[in-house]
Image (cartoon, rainbow, N blue to C red):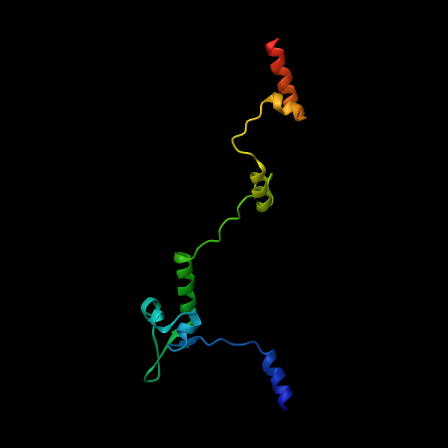
Length: 132
């Protein structure tokens, strides 16, 4: 068997994860440093002796600890903020707010002089009818 054939067969085979994870590799498997692993995780797991000095942990038990940790401490994603129908773009809303002259109250007469809307004209008509 040539080197190219061996490489193809090795890459075609699925990667097998070991069932036991050694103490030196367990913190890396969980994505944390050794001190944090020893303080927060290790006392929750069953220690599996390997040989005279080796210590390992069951990968499935590590995965179960992660699931439990996430269920207790994980955060749910924030709900999307609903935007107002009148304002789809924040910069446009801020820009339109700057165009308004705060504290200026226009009467129906002033709006009529400026060629105001039909609603303002109807309001002016109602006011003039009340006076007469």
